[in-house]
Amino acid sequence: MRTAVLQLNSQGMSSTKLYNHIRVASKKGVEVLLLGEYVLNPFFKELEEMSLSMIKEQASHHVKILKELSSTYKMTIVAPLVIVKKKKLYKTIAKFSPSSTSYYHQQILINYPHWNEEKFYANIIAPIKTPLTFKVDGFKFAVLFGFEIHFDTMFSELNSKNIDCILVPSVSTFDSYERWKRVISTRAFTNNCYILRANRIGEYKDTEYDWKFYGDSVLYSPDGELLNHLGNKEELMIVEMSHSEVVHSRRSWGFKEAYTKRSI
Image (cartoon, rainbow, N blue to C red; front, side, top):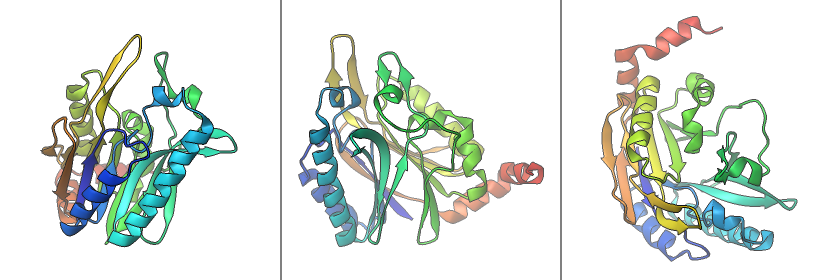
C-alpha cells in the first residue's frame, strides 16, 4: 500500500500547493494521502477571532477542491477540517474518496486553559464510539486525531477491527517531538499496526506563547520501529506499507491473540 503525508502550513483559501503535491503523489502511485491538523483552516487560536461565515466559506471551498482532486486522481484524501452546522463549529476529519465523503467528529478534545478546544467547538461529549475506519484495496485504515492517541479507550474500540494502519493528523508544538515519538512508537508496537502521523508546520504567536509547529511527520512499523520521518519544512513523504508485515508482527508477539481469548 503506497500512502503519503503532505506536510504543510495553513493554506487559507489557497489550493495551489494541494493541486501540485497531489498531482505528484498521483504520478508516484499514491492511493491514500494524509494532511495534518489546521492545514485547511487557520490554527485554533486564529479561528477564535474569525467570523462563522468566513470559516464556513473556507470549509466549503476546501471540500469542493478535495472532492475534485480525489475524483480526478482516484485517491483517498484524509484531512482535518473545521465545519459549520447550524451556526456551531465542529472539529472533524474528512475522508474524500472518489465515490463518497465521510466525516469523523473528534471525540476527545484538548481542554487546557491556554488551548481549550473542548469549550470552543460543539463536538458532543459522550461515551467513546469506534473511530472512522475504511479500506483501500483490502488494506484497512483507521483515523484518530493527535490528542486522541493518548487515550487507551480509543484503541480498545479498534482492537477487533484488524486495522493495518492508523492515520494520525496532528498539530504538535512546544518542543514535544521526543514525547510524541515515544507515544506513537508504543502505540504502534502494542497494537501491531503501522501508525502514520502528519504534523503541520508554521508558527503562531500570541501575547503569551510562541506556537511553533515543527513537522516531524513519521511512519512507525507494527513492531514500533521508526521507518520514515520528515524535518520541519514543506514536504511530501511517500511510504510503503504491507499487510503481510502487520500479520507477521501480530503472530510474532501474540498480543491480539491474548486479548481475543479474554474478550467477552
